[in-house]
Image 1 (cartoon, one colour):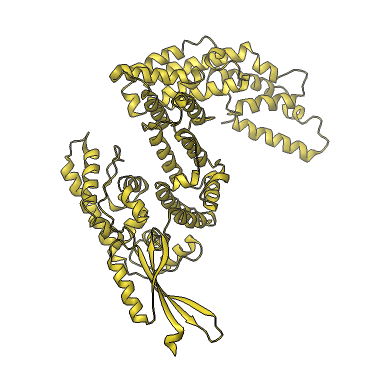
Image 2 (cartoon, helix red, strand yellow; image 1 turned 90 degrees about the vertical axis):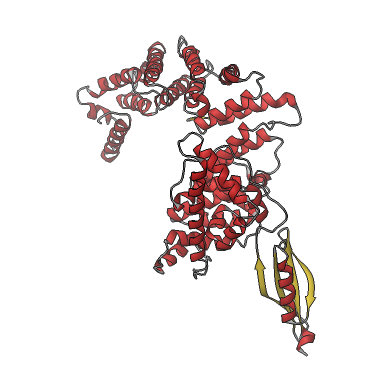
Length: 566
């Protein structure tokens, strides 16, 4: 009989894992039992597996029913505390942008972690959004908090701002409901291919919006953060369409707002080490051997190394900076190692182009340093800025810090302290007093030039910028003269071609800023270029006419790069 050869397993999902709860021998009975399990709000999902016993004794399994859901009801959930939000959004599209999704990620962190949902899935899935709106007072509490933060320094009151946010939420919800039953292609290949299919449908909805609906439907089946990350990373690494990768980047940033970062980093001895590893990951230099995220960590690291995830990088840096500013110790086991860990962190955020994230990094480091100071108010702020400055290796690096700090909210309250330290910086007597004496000449000049560039681009008052930049330029010119930098490059015993190329490469290398020092180097080059029959002398020694012309052509390209012939 059929009943003797057929059975139905009813499986239930608990904490992301499926387990068989009972077995029925009739399909309608199995479906009734599954629906009873799903009636419990704490049930994450239920499915039915049909087992068919063949005549040869082998068993065939097939899934005939499956329903999952997120956001299981397991008691009250509260919003997470936040103290900063981006500028006010005006349209639903603005609310669904990276900055706003970052806020959603942070304020609904407790709910999203339990539901294993990204803000993208939440906003593009009507059922999930409705479930959030029905969960306790989460949405009203979040709207009230965001409205307060966005109106604290404006003429608008928080109540009217809250009403604006609620209206936009209603618009987002209505749009998600409108597309809930739209049939979309399967995402079984490249994301960009699916996007092209969606465009071809010529639907009245925006194609990019529908693409995110499709991606959300696909991701909601992944019941772990690592699973979602792996799916997104594999889609991003194989897609040649920059726009498709950009859209995936935003959702990867959503995932990185969860606790999956801890799995990616693996075991770390302390918070300081974890923060440094976050910076490594953001730069695509993370050692993945000890990661608990497996292949996902490797692909993610590669995507960062290839500079394909700017939104995710910004999210990761933001997370790292919030950890720096937190009161949590950098090294919990030994209090005496706190300052050592801090210095190690400072070394990590110093890059060849300055602080890893400019003003954001400068502010975070200063806030972290201020936690070691007992004084408060203006005295505590002054001690924090001074202490942080003294932690840096030399005045040039300190100038990078001061210039970046000036552009932060913290720096706006410490203008007098910054000005006092700037006076100390420009009291340096020579380049060896401005930069570490142990640095090679080229590195000294490049560090001073970086300081010059950072000051010029800073928010410091124009008269201050001009004064400091002139000081650096004068100091560099004096160094070029006293160390005979140009003369060493332009050795008269060398071939004219070698002398000219070395000098032009020096000017093109970014070793000097535009100013007196650079002008002195260019004058030496111009003296060579104005020699009679320069081109003929330059190619003298070549026996192959083609190679000679190529060498001359490359030299003229280098001249343009070095600022000649503009």
